[in-house]
Length: 525
Ligand code: XMP
Image (cartoon, rainbow, N blue to C red):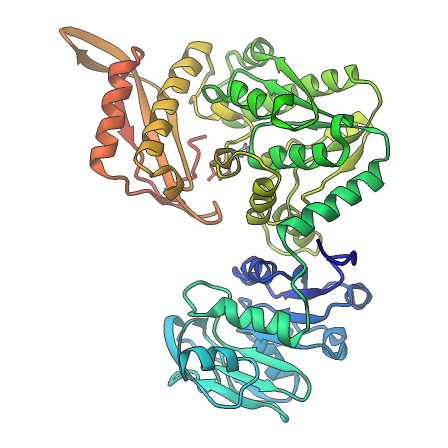
């Protein structure tokens, strides 16, 4: 238990210049026990002043300070008087704005590099103590700082980037050309810990136990004795919201689980089991069997986007109807997490970001006239998982692969039929069972079977079989924006294929998808 102060009070600001690593910086800061938020470099200055951080990290970014009108460090940030760490572009912007020099280069340095750390550095001292003066780091830059501003010292260099790190200890300004946030940088997290905890003076209050305590108190205060309804999908986010709200407000929470007929095998039973009253989760669970309604509305529709729309709007209808049967409901809970918040904020400030609007069921709060409660709004996925474990959810639920809202509806290519869903459910279950048995489930990021409405000929026993094809897809990814097909062992694929063809009558052939994203997407539709 912490001392009762708000665990958000000691916080860092991450100024986003558009680097692909910005969220990684924030995750590392959280990992060392310090709360932080990401805000764009052009966020309003008074907003940043009110945020009152104990330290600031400037992210990298794709631009070059040597060209006119490139993103600048907000004046408010340099006026805070708190420690500032510039990473890559962040360091270059610091150099350019404070009177140093940056030179452009057409040659990108990308990959491992070894820096030589000078004695007497404040930022890198703990790493130098632990490791000696040579440190293996990750570089990804074109421009480089060629002259440090007055007051700064060069604290590390490489042959190709003489200023690999610089600092002005008097003013608490630090810069590194390399990326301490990526795991390829040896001891990178130690550098971030030293900055956040020691140099900025944050205590490390941000941990699963404290996050849960504070969220519980906050929810109780917000909701009072009013009722809350939550659409429980069985996925990580909504399950953690359910467990958290159950702890906070007990049976004032009603969870609605909609069986749309497009779920994986046993999914409904597993959710009912996990959230049964005997499991110390005190909540009301309503399970709605809506298979027929979904399949009727989907009948004859082949276009993926049309199918998504139908599944989304049917869900809203069913959920709305059920929620109205529960008395005293004033709140709708949703499992929005921090990356969703960052994405929509970034788009507000006009930056190029692809919004995956189809990933959320929009329109519910407006239609239902309910107040919205989003208890995971400030958490990254890994934090959601940690508090899920802390709340006692089963590991296999907390660490399960993502499953799309439209479910098997976008994995049965073309028209969705009940028989196809049944075949696919069985094939998918065999695939996942074998992955678990071979210890591969946790080594891939997402794995599933796809039903191809293409008939092919096979021979089973003495009989000719003319039936559909199952495709297997397994990918490795960290962000789901890009992905590599998983190089599963041939023996494992062979075992899965044999079982699927032998055990399921409606399948004549199994194929393995060897497409990366891009250009292919993870789902087939
Ligand atoms: P794609 O196919 O776009 O998938 O490469 C990236 C990730 O998003 C998931 N996905 C969805 N999730 N509703 C969802 O809730 C959807 O309509 C949807 N489409 C794709 C996909 O499973 C993968 O994890």
